[in-house]
Every structure is written in structure tokens, then in C-alpha cells.
Image (cartoon, rainbow, N blue to C red; front, top):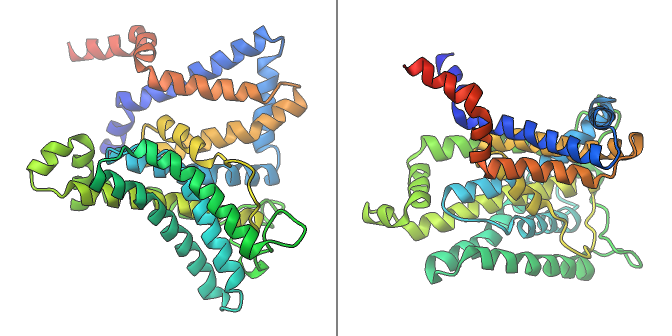
Length: 357
């Protein structure tokens, strides 16, 4: 109990909470300037999320890929890598799950579903591992390679769907068999597209924490992320840890792709552009301060704001783009922690100093 209290008493948890509140206040100020009622707008947002079992289930569905892509970005960041390629890794995971689900439809379901999920994670990890290998063996900056691999993944996924999976005359693949659906608790949430990917995301966060902070391999990864030269001097294999960290990060993103295909859409479209899962994951990772449990909380907030923005639009006539201003403001205050600490100084840090004295 003391340990839990100590964790939640640290500055690192107070600052994000205040940053969120400041972001909401900035959003309210923008609404007032635009002639909108911020109280009615935020009420409409929360009613949209919590107003019915269906909407609540759909809000959770919105959060799920954000959890996994946020974990993907955060895991790589903890290992000293900036993974901007989660979007491409999601696409590769979606494509792997689609190919396995459609082309191996005769395999028994109890084997095929785990095979599709594992295949999505594995291929997502291998795709991210390309950037890790190029960084470790050739010294090529992972920001450049992951951005380029996003586009390669987009066109490769579209090529595979068009060539092997396409329904003639339509811009999408064949349907994945209903028996392979990952959806669950549909009757409880009025047929909302809630799926097992949410449970997988929570398990991934636990794995993230245990692996990085409770194992020798995780200690090495964090050491490489903090100072690769010191880690190498201490006898750690820097290149191997870089490749491994990118592979695991890619697995998280690939699992997000499996959840979207098997749990939400049950087919794969030919995408005209990037679906954007990975870029939202960067924002979620920053909001969660790259801690696995912080990422889960950030994904819940981000998902609520994103799904609830439709309620603001329909019930309060507020443009949904205003939610992006709120999210952007929160990220700004998270990044500019000096401003938040300046706001807190008269209330929190002064009292803390008096206690010490």
C-alpha cells in the first residue's frame, strides 16, 4: 500500500494530470472564442461515450489500437529508438491476418484464430526489425527508415489485397469467416464491436512492464536506450538489443492490425492513404510518458476524446476539429513541463518544500 501511495505521489503523475486539465481549459477557451458553449460541448462528449452500452463498447473499441500502437512507440523509445513506423507495422499485421484468415479458411477455428493473431504480430515485428537491423548494422537513422517503410507497407498491403484477396468490382478483400471473429460481449454492449484485442493490449502492457523492469534483457535494453556507448563498454550487445527492441515494438503494432481486421471490419480495404493508427500512437506514447500503464491511461483519454467528438458535433454543433486542439494542447503541456511546473509551483512544490523544512 505504501509503495502504491509513493508511486502516485510522485511529480511525474501530477504533471500529466495538470497538463490534461490545462488542455481542456485551452479547448474551452477556444470554444468560447468561437461562440460555442464549452460546458454543453464537454457534456455532449461524455454523453456520447457513456450514454449507452453500445457507445461505451465502441469507445473501448476506439481505444484498443491506440493502446497497442502507443505501447509500440513507447517500447522502442525506452530502448533509445524513435519508432515512427507503427502505422506501416499495423498495415503489415492487418495484411498477414487477412491472408491467413481468408486463404487458410479450411483450418479448424481453434487453430486458425491464434495463427492469424500470432502471424500478424510476427510479421509486424519482422517489418519493424528491418529498421532495427539497418540502424544496428549500417547506422541508418530509424526515423528515416520507418517513415519510408510506412509507404512501402501501404503499397505492399494494397498490392496483396488487389492481387490475391480482392472481391471483383469492389475495393476490398473477401470477408474473413465469421467463425474467426475476435468480438466478444456483444450482447452486453448492444452489438458494439468490442473484441479480444483489448485484452491483448492490457496483457501487452503488463508484458512491457515486466520485461523492461524485471528482467536482465529489459535492463540491457533500457541501458542501451539511455547510453549505448556506456552499455557497449559494459559488455552489452548494442546492435542485438536495438533489433530486438524494434521487433517487439513491431509485434505490438502488428497485434493492433489483427484486432482491427478480425475484431472490427472482418475484411481489409485498399487504402488510399495511411490509416493513421501509428501516428496517433505517437501522441498516446507521449501522453503516457512512455510508461506502459501511462500509455493505457493515455489511450483511454485519447479514445474518449476521439469517439466523443462526434457527440460534440451532433449535439452541440461544435466542429470535431476542436477536439484535435484539445489533444494538441495536452501534448504541448506534457512536452513543455516547465510551464506546468510553473503553474503548480505556488500550490504543490511550495508545500512540498515546507514539508522538507
